[in-house]
Amino acid sequence: MLKFEQKLRGNVALGVNPLGCKQEVLNQIEYVKNKGTYQGPKKVLIIGASSSYGLATRISLAFGAGADTIGVSYEKGPKNERSLGTAGWYNNIAFREAAEKEDLIAKNFVQDAFSHESKQEVIEYIKNEFGGKVDLVVYSLASGRRTDPDTGETYTSAIKALGEPVVGPNINMQNQDFYTETLEPATDQEIAGTLKVMGGEDWQLWMEALKEADVLADGVLTTNYSYLGTELNRPYYGGGTLGLAKADCDEKAKTINAFLADINGKAQIVVATAVTTKASSVIPFFPVYCIGLYKVMTEKGTHETPIMHIDRIYRDMVYGTKAEYDEAGRLRPDSWELDSDTQAQTKALIQQLNKENFNTELAAYDILYKEFSILSGFMVDGYIEQDVTIEELKALEY
Ligand code: NAD
Image (cartoon, rainbow, N blue to C red):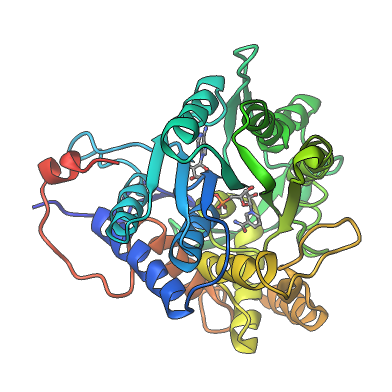
């Protein structure tokens, strides 16, 4: 019988509980089903579909709007008892099994989305087995590296400040420690690398390839998740390298809008709220902001997990009547986070935090840690321990 152990290196999860991941996918499906159905797209491509925002998008659209979905992600399967693979691998499988039970198509591509080959394989599949067209393309990639498909050069992103170093408190979930970190300003190379990896270039390449192949339906929509944040995290996010990458996505949205105009298509930047994900847990200082924010938002009844936030985005905003846009045309579901009283209370709270009290009921470290654990299949509500062998895990097909 396999033993699943939660192991961390800093704020990176190393262990996985495959059965816990499955239970969490089922929990999210249940959440969406309890909200009932909504009118939405029927054929959806999600790039970055295996965890957090991308997975939640897939679940909401499939189980809320009855969409067939294609999910592209980069995940690892099990090799042996010490190398069980990644959570996203098992999320993909659990999603496909559940969707197929409801006669929905759920095709998984587990490969490098940045390559030309991946784009062509997905296009062939859309043409030959997916009805020929998609009506929504969701771009939800988060990665630390990208190989340029034309030059073969590999770029690395760096989450850094610009100009001046930033000094502030951070949390290490492995040691349950609250400590002071200094974030050095990025070099020109790091700025360029972050733009290449987390900017909008690959989103544009996907949309160009899909348009060129004539697999976009008339009126197609493409969404891309951004984050703007507030003055509390501007020095290291909005005003840092990631902020530049997100601004690049804003620019690429304009380019995509221009070439989709003849098919009445639209590129939509969605400024999503701060949530606990694999990607956000390694942003320096961000966990401290989150434990303050989550505490305040939980008390106000506005704290959301990815599935809650994403389901509200598509059900109520994109395909509903409650959309809120800013002057730049971006969709702003993050208005609950940005609410002035929420921000003022968060600011006051995080100023009081220190080594001794960050893990007490003053803040929401407990919520952050639970949400982080759930990403790898631990601390999942409704999970019941079961026996499973490595052979059984290896036999699962994505
Ligand atoms: P995540 O790490 O949970 O998921 C990233 C996804 O990208 C996974 O499915 C992964 O398999 C996939 N991926 C990574 N590299 C790939 C590759 N080379 N080929 C194919 N797939 C690959 O990330 P997330 O936090 O859900 O972020 C998704 C988007 O949402 C990002 O643009 C992020 O900036 C944005 N966002 C996040 C937050 C937040 O607080 N987490 C807030 C607002 C916006």
